[in-house]
Amino acid sequence: MTATDTAIELARIAGHAAADKLATDIVLIDVSDRLAITDVFVIVTGSNERQVEAIVDEVEDKLRLAGTKPLRREGKRDGRWVLLDYAEIVVHVQHAEERVFYSLERLWKDCPQIEFDDGRPQGDGRPQGAGASQGAGASQGAGASQGAGASQADEA
Image 1 (tube, one colour):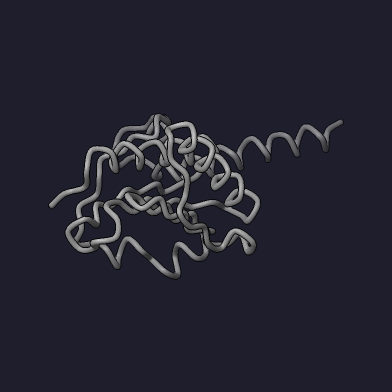
Image 2 (image 1 turned 45 degrees about the vertical axis):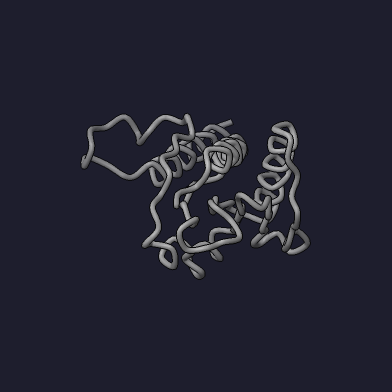
């Protein structure tokens, strides 16, 4: 058994909503062969509690526009790991530290991942193998611009 087309579409909507709020490491896992209660896990990372909350709000808004609302929501008060249960999909929005510690992808590594393109440019423009991954490249870009801004401020 594989995930339904509806579940896959909802998972992609959730993934794009998370990407709109700059979530990283967006993964869609088809767990339908292993779990009877849901078809797809959507796992995303927020860099801090505020971003986790923003991602959750955007996912809920976009899925509401698609005609569905969560059956259950857990963890919103803490802002470290929020679980949104939509029956066909379960969205896990995790703070970066929780993502590493719990490593849900490793627990579900036997399940197939669903292809997902968040619409953001891949990498830093250098050929494959020549530089950092997308996540690291994004961090370097942000750091470089912050550094440049700090230099300009020092000169002023």
